[in-house]
Image (cartoon, rainbow, N blue to C red):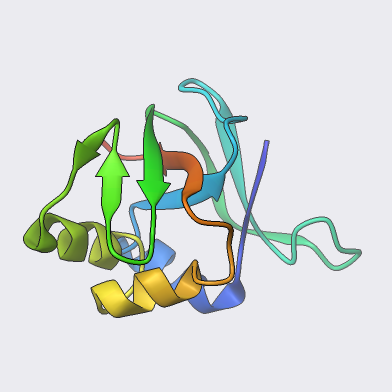
Amino acid sequence: MVLGFNEAFIPAIVAGHKIHTIRAGYRWQAGDVAQFCARARQPDQYEFWPPLPILSIQNVELTATSLRVDGRLLGPTEVLALAQADGFATTAELLGFFADQPSPFLGQLVHWTTKRY
């Protein structure tokens, strides 16, 4: 399955700093094979990383002030760690990225490493 990324995230993925991604909805399942693509569903779509299996999925609920993973409210230190592992420098950057989404934002944390929250 195509896992599309903004090209700004590619260096962090390739360097191993971005180790998961947050996606709307509930379409991903552990065992799916992700094709890491930029410009997804465009004529110039391209794969920038080899396909990898999705190792696990965690449900997320994100508001302007909180983040829950599998129903558990994360503390500020955990939210910052998740934000950084998702390619953001700060919690504010993560929250800002999702600011235009309906609140609460409901979706999945898609893992291609063994990291869990």
